[in-house]
Length: 187
Image (cartoon, rainbow, N blue to C red; front, side, top):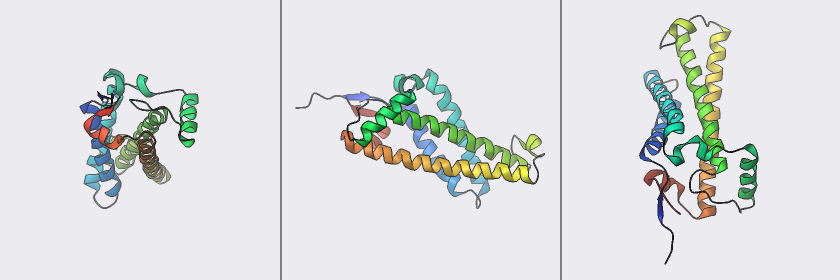
């Protein structure tokens, strides 16, 4: 008989944030040119979710707090070396690489949404319409290019994140996707 017990790791708000962000990003990414209204609303949803997560990272429960999973670069590198050698330490909450990925994703998504707002404003719409309307020609194109690059870079980070989740699940013989659905892991 195993002496492992279920540990509540990710609270319902973190899980709703995570899957809501997945949904909103996919909708925004897939609707970029063809369904602008959907793209814009999905982008606003991403922004709202980011604002929530930044606040929750400071006031949420233990495993939601940045102080629990944001590590020094040397710890992230040591974890990645252990991962490559299939000897990485197991963490109940996010491991150092997962924590670094969260930070990268938050910054990349913030850049994506802010440049999206700027590009939308340059078209004369949204809350930045008055400020960004002055962006014409190359300024407007540059905003759109940075927005597109940031969205594609975010997609790349997501693919790396999913690969890390799958590798971590295999290495530690635990279903991390299920844990992000149920909120529980084995101790």
